View 1: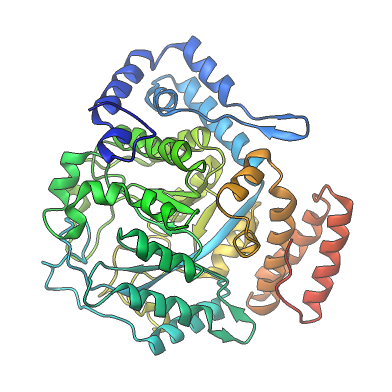
View 2 (view 1 turned 180 degrees about the vertical axis):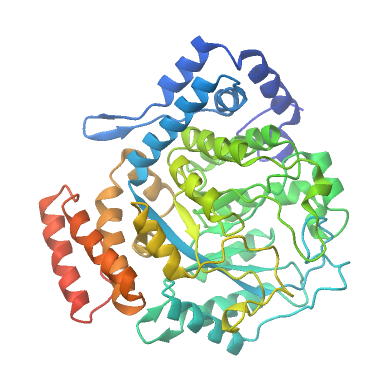
Length: 480
């Protein structure tokens, strides 16, 4: 099989022989300081003619960085990742929450407690009224952006159920609450059903590959529709053919060798760029975690926090334009380090059980995975500000049609910050007025006043001040 990033066949754009050659190349050159310096210099961001110029790296170059054993280069990699993240995303961190609709599933995934053989986990599917109550609970926290999750079950979770649920979510308006963006994480499907999701005005379509190692994938998915590696791996092409131009990639680190997964992940991003002219809108970085009948140790591929953080840093250098996500699977300490390395979106106040947000006490019986960071959204918002980050609830680009190549052209040039920075301040002010504790409110108001001065365009700064005054007067939903 020949490697071809423009091919639409999974075995050709995620080519096993190319990954093996890449890993051998990385091992051969991992301590080659001349090459390492060349790679770092290529990836360094700089401004040219008023636009940000940052080329990123291909999968081979990035794999060399990940493989290096030289401590001084580990430090250089971390510092460059920080520089790139600051250039593209500044100090903003976007917040979201997952919403689990159903844990009915017909697949046999060995790493997920929702697999059909598990008879100990209670099965539950939310009614539309229950979804409405969950959304109200999330709105009362302050959330504006959700990622809906559901197991693969054509009988219990057909596309009609997903579409009806999206409509319900968008139509719940409680007090000043509104969900302005619904991202969707459901099983690989057809072009026709992706068109339906596009028509339902979803944000990003998210699908984790789990593992790019085809033989390992087959072993981990012994039965069910998800066992078809090619159909699953080629899903993003069908989604884009269906009109969804914002897609989110991810692997489940710990299932297979991390360097193999890293190379495959970047090859997938390169494929989307080559075929569709736009790379992934987001890349997620989950690790295998304990769950109802899941023991991560049995996979024998767990990675230490230090390696995990270096993966994130190398990914930020390779795909500088892409939003990068870490969830509450990870602890507060790991999330703190990951933010510095390149993460730009995090979940907060998450519950991974079906119907968990309406419960006073966090339920564990239907959780997909253990939540390590169990702080409230308010605690996460305050923590971010204390760390120097602006918590952002912004959904403006999606709602203004700045998606796909339109978003990427703005992001790659650095011009997106002319929208994102003021939008972050506006949505933060909404959160402070409507949901924050007194302590969080005080810290946030000071941050907004300080950050106003960092808006370089004077007219945008003055317009932002006017919007902030209108928010103080009770108006909502301003955006650039």
